[in-house]
Image (cartoon, rainbow, N blue to C red; front, side, top):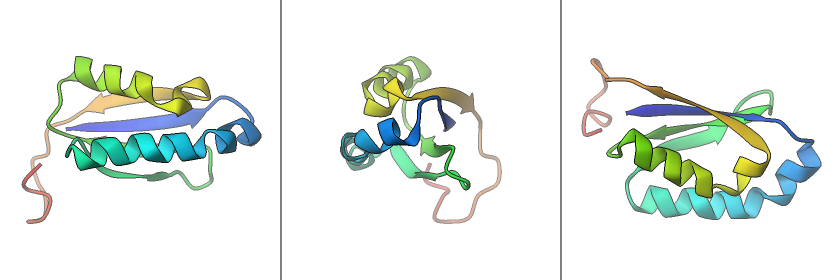
Length: 91
C-alpha cells in the first residue's frame, strides 16, 4: 500500500484551474481499484492519496498523468498495513 502526499508548489489560482482534470484522473483510478481514499490537506496546501494493488513504478507512471503534476510535488511512502479494521483488510 502507498501513501502519497501532494504539496502545491504554485499559486492556488493555478491549482484551481486544474481541479476538474485532477478529479477526473482520480475517478479513473478509483474505478480501477487502485486509489482507495483521497482528499485535501487542512489547511489546503496539498492533498493525500492512498493507493493499493499497484507496483511503485506503475504508481509513478500514474502520478505523472495527474494534471496536478504541473502544480504539486509528490512524496510516495510505501507501507505494509499490519493492523486494519475489517473494511480495510481487503487492501
